[in-house]
Amino acid sequence: MKKRIFTLLVLALLVVSATLPLYGCEETEESSVGSQTEVSDGSFFGLDIPEGTNYDGKTVRVLTTSVTETATSYQIQPDNNSLYNAETATAAITAAAECTRLVEERLNVEIEEECIVTLSRIGGEMYKRIYNDALSLTADYLFAMPCVIEAAMLAKDGLLYDLGEVSTIDLNNEWWCKPFNETCTIAGHTYFGSSDIGYVSKDATLFVAFNKKMAETNRITEKYGYSSLYEMVDNKAWTQDVMYEMAKSVYQDLNKNNICDPGDVNGMAGQVGVIYWNLIAGGEHIVTKDENDLPVLTLNNERAVSIINNAQDYFSDPQSGFICADDYFSQSKIPVTDIIVPEFKADRCLFFYNALLNLDLIRDMESDFGVLPCPLYDDTQDNYVSNIGAWSATCICIPTSTVGDDVKLAGLVIEALSAACKEKLNPVYYEQTLQYQISRDDDSMRMLDIIFENRTPELAEAYRWGTMTDVLNNMVKAQKGTFVSSYQAAEQATQKAIDETITAFMERDETID
Image 1 (cartoon, helix red, strand yellow):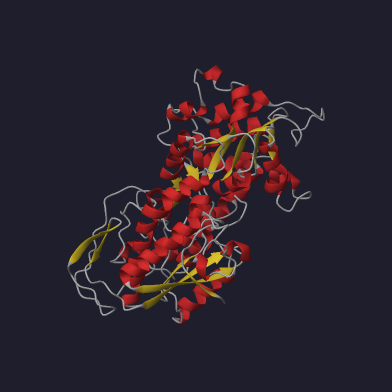
Image 2 (spheres, one colour):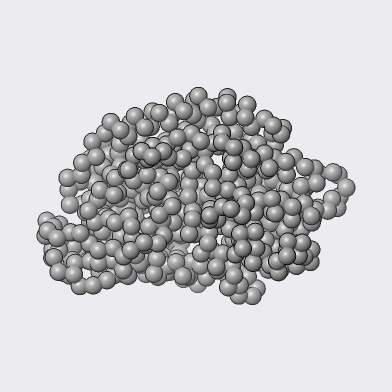
């Protein structure tokens, strides 16, 4: 497999991490690795690294994953990549490479990446590699960035360290995604987490784009007493019911076939996951945690059922103005690209509900659009919340194949890269993400802040407990009133899978030498 210098950036896949006190290094004893000392020389982008920290050029290898060979060009040090072209490289790629260079220089290490290119996310090459290396203790990499689903599988198998127990990691640092990490922590153990390293997990975050021309022409906010959708977001008036109402209000069946399809003027475009996304956006989850930090199946509660039923009322309406990309797989290998995006770019669709990575697809649209968080369930909800797709988002873990002082080194490199990326990469990523716009839109920048403040995956999707995500996805096309029976049919198997994971977590020894 090809070795590459590490910067860890973006997945080029069409699908469907952070505020707390600064870190103070707790290491006071001299390490047998390198030549660390006890004296602090100040801050490395907010991270306190002992003066004289020097690992004498030690190689720190990292195992990453990507979905295609083309996508790997976004994850490695550009000038060491045969596919790299300085004239076409994005600013974010260059910024990530600079973050890696700064960490290498500060710690005197050489960071290398081995990228496994695979479409498999369930027991595929990435999982098998880490699994086998952890059992045989033969790995030559110190930490890994698998997708969330693979990390959850490895966590259940007991092959990852608890990041909270690694002495050189402080999960309270501002570059860690607190909502993500809190969601994925079970029984007090955080086996994988998300930080500001790269922007793969950011790109896997759900959001809503709106067509500015259509919004202005149809005066969609006027009825609600607001001058803009941004103002509605600020006043917690951007709710799911409002989105549904707005989508229906602009629908025009131009081809007179009584179907919401391409060529009509539609209100919303998305995929079958939209009810699932709105469940998370509404502050509900398939699985939550109890007072002992253990997962509990809580989907079948009054509020969650209300979110689902309201959504079904909208999606089952022939005049909804909703077009679903998944309906066009027979016509296109990537229907989001070939079917949905052209409609939005042609000013024939008001809302585009999908992952942030798809912003790259609409940079060349002639008219302008804005960025919104996923809508609230109602105005009593505390925060806007966005789902992070467990299939596409990567995360950070330290496999148990890393031993001794290498565990501390892995933690230090993770923290340093995270700190550097928060300071040097994030601002560039924001700018690049919104470069599609004809005019500078400071409000969309603010919306990104709101989106990234509360991003979380779903435990049931990450651990693949039962088929509840499929149940929710099916609700987009299912007959109204069928959710409860569908839930009951999947409940027993889901609960059994949750119980098996809890047992596996509670029976293991968490000591890190």
